[in-house]
Amino acid sequence: VALVVPSTAESDGKPGLDQDGMISTVKAMRAAGFDYHVISPTGGNLCSALPQSSTAQRDVRTRNIEMLLSSTKALSEVKTAWYAAIFLIGGSTAMGDFKNNKELRELVGRHYDQNLVILGVCEGVIGLLQVVDSQNKPIVKSRRVVVQLSPGNEDSKIKEQ
Image (cartoon, rainbow, N blue to C red; front, side):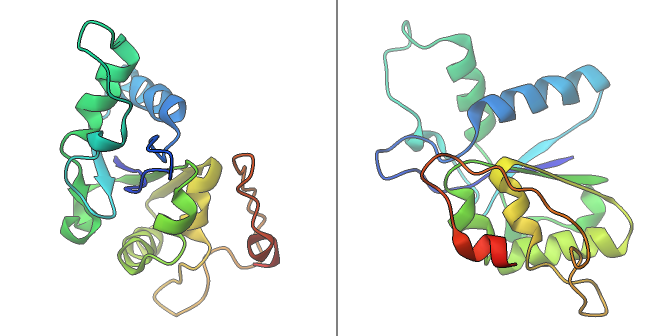
C-alpha cells in the first residue's frame, strides 16, 4: 500500500498531515499484514516539520511519526505496479500538495484504470478531484465525494467541483 502524505509543513512549523490518521492507518496495515511505503510529493525526510524536543521528552507517537517520515519516496519515483492500493492521507497542507499535483493525478489515474484500490481520508480526497481515467473522463464524475476539512481550511472552490 502506498500511503501518500503531504510534504509541506504549516506556516507555524507543525506537520501538515493528519498524524493521528496516519498512525491509526499504519497500525491497521500492520495488524492486517500489509506492507506499505510512505510517499510524498517531494520525497525525502519530512521530519523537519515535526516539533523539536529532546529525545527523552518525545513520546512513542512522535517517534513513530519520525520513523515513518524520515525517508519518504517521491511521487515521481513510484510505479503503479508496486502497489495494490493508494491511500491519500489528509492534513491541512494536503490542499496545496495534492490538489494540482500532476504526478499524483497520474498515479491515481493508473490505479483507477487497473481497478486497484484508491482510498482517501479527510483532506486527502482532494487528490482525487482532478484525476481522469485513460479516456480523459473524471473519475469522480457523478459520484459523491465528502471532504472533511480542518478548521480554517474551508475552500469554496472545492464545493463547486
